[in-house]
Length: 312
Image (cartoon, rainbow, N blue to C red; front, top):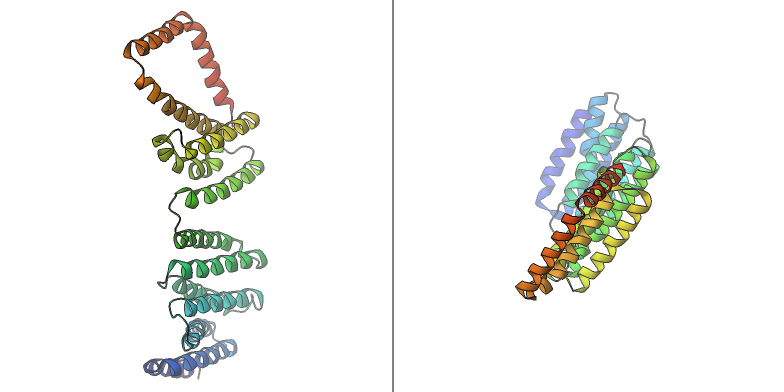
C-alpha cells in the first residue's frame, strides 16, 4: 500500500509538470500524503524514503505556489523555499527528534535548502536569501540538541550574504569586504586564546590579523602619505601595543612589520630625492656607528630575539 501511494504521488507530480498551477497544488498535496504515509509506515526504510520525497515535494510546492503570484520569480520563490526548508528542519529536530523519519526529513530539507540558495538572482536577492538561511541555521544550532555544528554553515551563509550586500551597494574598496570578517575572526581568536592558554597565537589570531591588516597593505604602500596608510599605521600601532602588553607573538610581529614598511615607504621618496653624497654620508655614518658598537648591537639583537621567542 505504501509503495502504491508513493508511485501514485510521483506519477501525479510528473504529469502535473505541464501546468504550473496544477503542479504546485499537486506537489503540496503529494508532500502531505507522503508525510502521513511515512508516519504510519512500519518499515523504517520505506518510511524514510517517503519522508524524504515528501519533504522535497513540500518545499517545491510552496515555492511553486508563491511563483503563481505576481512576484519576481528569481527572488521570492527561492526565499520561500529557504524558509520552508528551515521550518521542516526545525520541526524534524524539535518536534519529534526521536522518530525514525526525522533524519530523512532533515537531510532532504538540507538538500532543498542548498538548492534554493544556489538559484541565480541579483546580489540583493542573494543577500536576503543567505541572511535568512544563516540566521535560521544559527538559531537551530542554539536550540536543537546535537546540532551545534550548524553554527558553522550558518556563519558561512552570513558571510556570503554580507559579501553579496557589499557588491549590491557598489563599494569598491577592499576593506569593506575584509575588515568586518577580520574583526569577527579576531574576536573569535581572542576568545579562543583566553580559553586555550597553551595554544599558539599564530594559530588563533593569525587568520584574523591577516584578514584585518594585509588587504590594506599594497594600496597603503602605493600611497604611504594617504589616509588609508595613516589608518593602517594606527591599527598596527594598537595591535603592537596590545601584543607588548599581553605578550602575544603573532600580533607583535604583524604590527612591527607593517609599521616598519610604512615608515620605510614614507622615508623612501625623501631619501631618493636627496643628493647621493648626502645619502652615502648618512649610510656610512650609520654603518660606522654599528661597527663601533657591534658587540652592544649583537647583545641587543639577541635580547630582542629572546623576547619575541618568549612570547606566546
